[in-house]
Image (tube, rainbow, N blue to C red):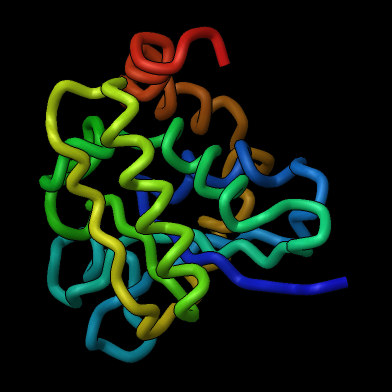
Length: 175
């Protein structure tokens, strides 16, 4: 087993958990805050842009079963990579999409993946999702963990009104 960690931001972290949670090779996935300066930030402070953190997920995976590239292939279908002001109905810096690389290999894979997506012509606008060095990650409060399992109705409602599903259907088909 070759365990690695991927840290990704893409708007509301609730919406990034479920698509990875049942993938073969994903050992765990947690919600949290990454990239800011405040130690142990709280949800309200992140939400209101007071910490420099973005809502993120941290995925622990066995790269012999699922590669970092495959993680990114899923990730691109969950975000609007042309939007640098937030994601869907979540607006502001703390909801921006970002890829945090943990080593030079992840950086190279992320840059190649982003370039490939840009070259595909799938999006008319430029792919603006930044690829930045991993700095830190703090677990979100317990009620945010596995939210789609704990509060399925609220999760479903939030997901439906976000615009993610329509965007995904428009750009990625019925995936």
